[in-house]
Length: 181
Image (cartoon, rainbow, N blue to C red; front, side, top):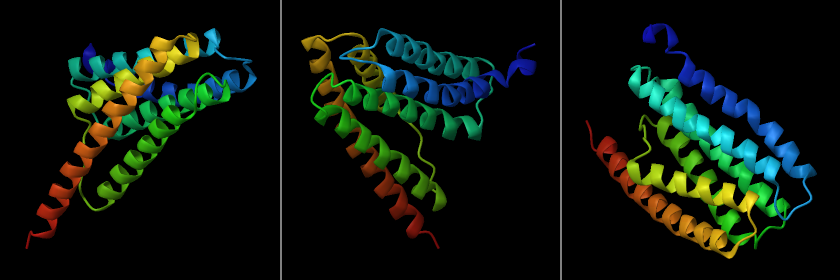
């Protein structure tokens, strides 16, 4: 039975991508400083990330498409939410802008590395960083509370740390591919 359902994880990733314009429209129309509707949409869409990953592993349905599209969908979802936090004037734009810049650099670097034959994978620290950033972004869409701002800055610190770690790994892999005969 599970083999017939192996398409579901990738379909959930595609659905996450399709939901992004809806979330963006809700955020553009929201009056702020929070938007419970946007937070709800964000929460449901973010939950599909958890579900598709669990199903892909359980059903041995991990694919190259999923390894590339799933983290991209996550980055785009978080990016839209962070843009929403800025649009809502929920907090100083510095923390969301740093997270957006980091994600743009990560996606560009992963794509450039892939073009050179170096495939990077999201590690556990990256998954924790993504989860924390998702929680902070969703929290900022829903609540105008100081502790959410602190959570956002913790997410920034962890995101910058994981960025440095990915850079270290990428440099090592590039060096090893350039020394091969």
